[in-house]
Image 1: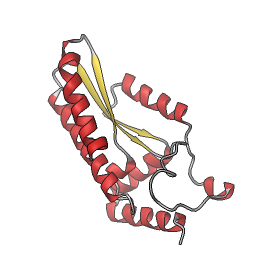
Image 2: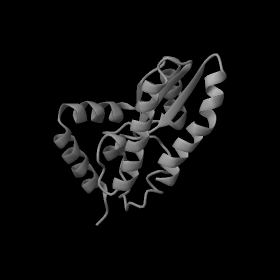
Image 3: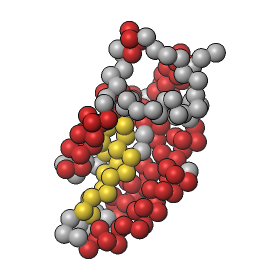
Image 4: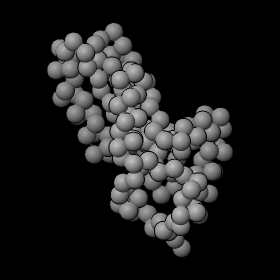
Length: 158
C-alpha cells in the first residue's frame, strides 16, 4: 500500500498544483489486472492496485473541467522481473505453455501506454491478456475469478 497506493497519491498531490497551471497536462497511473480481478496469492497487491484504479477514476471525474487529463493503465503480462519478485513460487514454463499468453516487451507496453495517453484514453488495457480478462470480468466476474484461480494453480510449484 505504501508504494503502490500512497506513492501514487503523494506524487499526484505534489505535482497536481503545478499541472493545473500548465496549458495542458496528463496524469497516467498504472494499476494492474489485479486491480479489477482477484489474483490468488496477490490479494494485498491487488487491493493496492484497485485503490490506484479508483483514485485515478475519481481524479478523472474531478479534473474534467480542467486542462489536466487522466488515464488509468492496466498492464497484462510484460517481460519484467515482476514474477520473479512476486514472492510466488512459479514453475518455469516451456515454450509451448508460454504461447497461450503473449508477453509484451517493456518497449511495446510503453508504446501502448503513450498512445493511450496521447488519445486521452480513460482506461488503457496493455496486452491481449488484459483485454481478454477485462472483457471476461465485465461479462462474468465469478467466472473470471475462477479462471484466474485455475491458471495460477497450474503455474504454482507444489
